[in-house]
Length: 236
Image 1: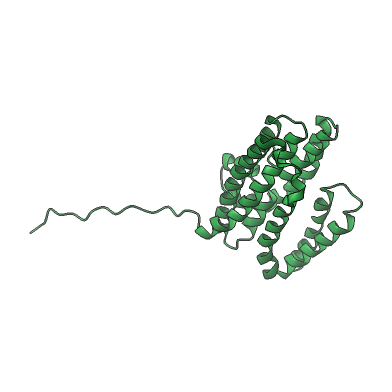
Image 2: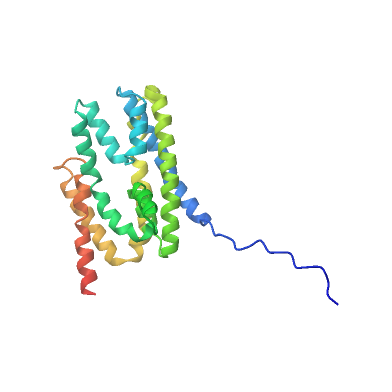
């Protein structure tokens, strides 16, 4: 005899979200980003720029070092062309980052376009620190979207605060990002001797030329360490 009772349908396939540990680790980068964003907004407005300038720049340009440099040029009396050229020079390093992260962004032109805007030192370092390709993609988007939101909120808050914060350099805010980046890349450096040698070569070159070249250029020259990485890879 049949029964009219049927097995209730299940909840359906679950869509895995980002692992909690990725969110936890990315939150450190978000915190550092928010702090430095507040500093940038406050410096820009305290120097005489209107509130909308750092806010729009953060949304459209979205590059911390380039934004600081461009604002510094403008506050020193330079024109918009000189400020833009300085920002473009500093951002040329993201070309190498884009090549390293291209396969991580995911398929589709729109996905790649949005992902390209989120490519920063922090998102690339956070993603490449993951060994699994799927986890690497999640790490990029989790850190990238969160970083974009927190950075822009921090810049807006700093711009609205204006000069009330005083000299933000006295708080040592400029040390926040380097400390986070070191924490992100340490696991990769420990696990791969070839990457460690390349990183040491790049760091040595950057330190050697720092007293003689403008800010931002040492970062570009540090990419020469990738030559050592490529030669080792070709010989293996």
